[in-house]
Image (cartoon, rainbow, N blue to C red; front, side, top):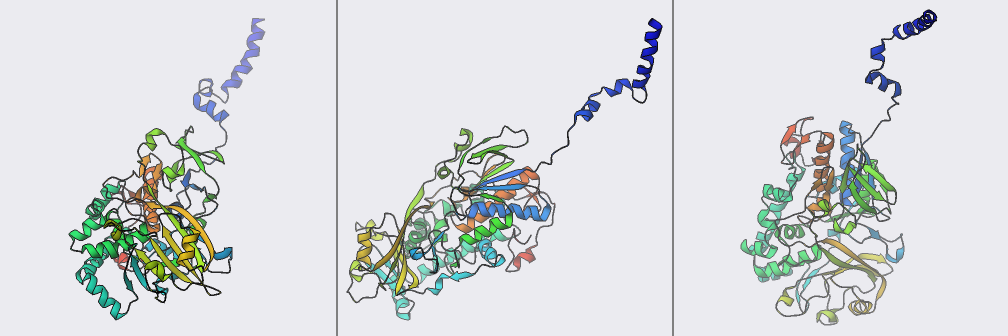
Length: 526
């Protein structure tokens, strides 16, 4: 029996030996080979919170890296509103789309804003110059019309008599120097930064952010009268803040409106084009409730919204931090101090009154009042009445003998006030309240840009400079940091350090000669 049993086992033993070796068959590598399933290709995902200037341009910059260097990522953009554009959106008088559109939010950009200017060219959008509406301009202090300027030689003579020659010249030089320095953002040597404080120092702007506009200009020899009247008119219409409050860098931006333009059909179209170009998945009407560390071993962050929970390799917050209402870990939210925003009331209306009511400004009934009325707080500083609005401006005819008027104010403008200002000739009215821009007092402290690994904050730039254009510059920097950190890449193919030095060159940088060409813009042309 034992013999027969041995004979029975011999074929079995030989079966295991030929062709296999018993001791190797049961190794870990062979077991894994038997149970291994086909791998599903994994594409990292990036979430962008917000579809305004910052978020849409962030998606665009990522797509440039995908297009040029094959960076393989998917992009999801979350937007709580039903539209793209953030604080840039349009309305129509009487809700009649056959009439010209009106910008309800961010209205203008200038030729020095090279990203928006280039985008309008690349996307075949038509620009409209606001200088085409060449209305007389006045400055009102709440009790007195201080000046009226229509461009005549006599008005120019009156301005020189009131302010002298040197103050306007020095203020102009201040703005021109700021713009010249600003243009470095489009050069091959554009800085890369992970600290706004360091960036301010690099650009030589620390003194500008540490002083009010009034303090800085007066120290530069600009008269108090010119600063408190003309310069303040600019800071109040553009930022709703006075020269003795707003820091000098933003004061310079407020005065840099020469050549102001907008997009026919609405500026929001630029941001729609950014997103269309990027190929991002855009989720409108989708509020994000939390951004927390991911439970996934391959992703860093989980984003919870009406879509459920989705995991991401990186998240870019492209909206004002506190206003998002998003729950972050305390280690994140504690890093970002609350930044108060200007609560701005915008009133749009149509009127058949060709001018504001002269009686409101203490003038005779037949007086022609400027159709662009700016304001100064100087009268209130002297104990007088403060202006009831920041600015009041006519914006062309809409037909049927009506003009469009836009009013910015700190408080809501009542129907009774409008009836008085436009002598009972008011047609359509629309009111909108915005948290339009941050309050911008002097500071040397700014929100962080990188909140944690894979988590970035574009709007950290807003307390430094708050414009549509600078949101696109900040997003470009954030995208470069993110691509560098997580994908060893960049928009222009370089692995960069935030200090601005290159750790490793992957693609050649554009030359200074290329930048000298007027149309070169870093990020577009590299």
